[in-house]
Length: 264
Image (cartoon, rainbow, N blue to C red; front, side):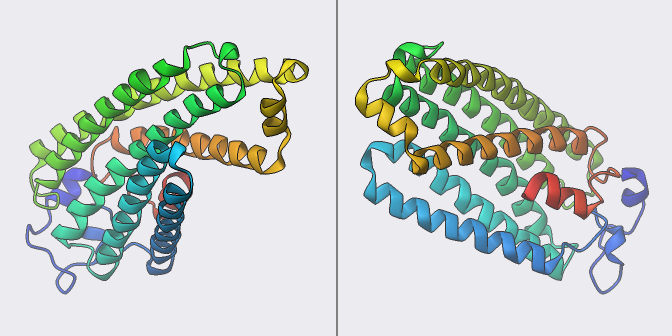
């Protein structure tokens, strides 16, 4: 698929070539991407408000603010590609920002589990709560660096005209995504053990922890975090499948799958 794209004129523009000649093979849907720009922008503003309101959760809020801000701008770059599928700026921003953003959101979830274990019952955690941040955020940082470096290399490939650079960037991004999937899986096991123990120890909790555990708002918050974690895990798996055949792969050229498995 890449060879087919690379054989086309190097200086394609929206006026001289159809969108199918671009590396994504389509012009991103204007309405869908505008929706995600708005959703992530609203989320970013909400986390900014929460950061002022709940100082104890500042680390979590900062990670979510940065993640949602990058997501919003990243989908803004897809609006640029919607107007011009051959936009070099839109292509580069899309690669870099939508690569960085989910890793920052994941870092926020890692920080969240630390606070949950401390607030409920740290003795039930399979890992010392103070270790969640240095271990998992460090692993996440390594994944961010790899994905960001791979994205930057691909972005430097002049919108898909340098196959060697694109292939190198893809391989580095896949390494970063794979490390993130492994880290997410280990984190999921530890979180699952903690919540399983919590479910069996409800009657032995301290009064404040028991009230917190039973609060409907708290439970909705935890469920939302779990859903976000699952969606990020699915997104990482999808991105590996999308990139394994290189830029311009058949999966990459189907926007509906991108919206369902990456955007959502």
